[in-house]
Image (tube, rainbow, N blue to C red; front, side, top):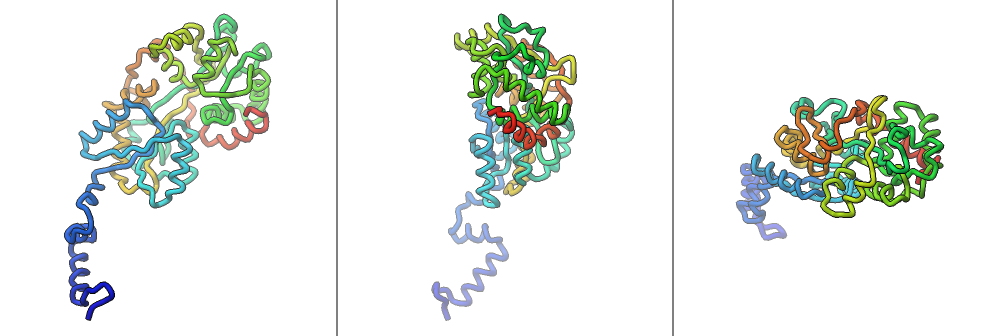
Length: 357
């Protein structure tokens, strides 16, 4: 007797027995119904990353050389990657997710996109204030002030609080208050000062804006150089990038501006991270963990951080970056990144309330 596919019962029993003894994938390869490449997945991992630096490709190649694990890279913005993972659900091929800010990492974790790291190596390498159970910081950057020294004295701008001084009216430029870099800074203020003082400060800064918020951090620096404003907020790596640029316009921008490390007489300058974690539905968890441990290793940390003019998270690894060396050392705020990242919803509510659009 045969079934609708033309197989006899004896043949069907033979196939099922073969599948049970060989394993389904091996049995299908044996039949020629599946490619041997299906077994190669054990030596691959898929990386979803918001980083877009050519120097990273060399590091991924080095990881493959050391481990034999191929890295399939999917690059996009932070929020598009989060939305993609949410829409893909359990069918996602992603093993590792790298994002550019603690606020974004916290948001991804709140969406249930990460799983526990389970890595003694990461716990040992990365300071506790720069990681959580589910994600780790892999590079650090500072939120700095940039001034036109001909219009604003450096001695008058020593902290974030000075952005709100009446004397700064019409002189301040920032990007949108809803951007994660800003929300993280506001989150740190909420932790330190509470909602009432933070709201008062935010209202005063909005009143001091030279123009409605627009553009990215580099645009704010250029606005200071052009005279559109005299004081701006930026991540440190944007300024370092201009310092290392060979373009005459960028060099002119640097020559007309000055970077200020805020809050040095207080807790220190606000520091954020870029980092990542293992995707909750990762098909290759062991490879994903090995990849993050590789990025946190002493041999790789300096090169990974330099890709975006940042600092390594591993304390005994020095940044090999002439621009950062020229900027000098500074006191960093020791607040755990997860502490201020968790405030971003409250921070966004204040942004909406005070009109920092």
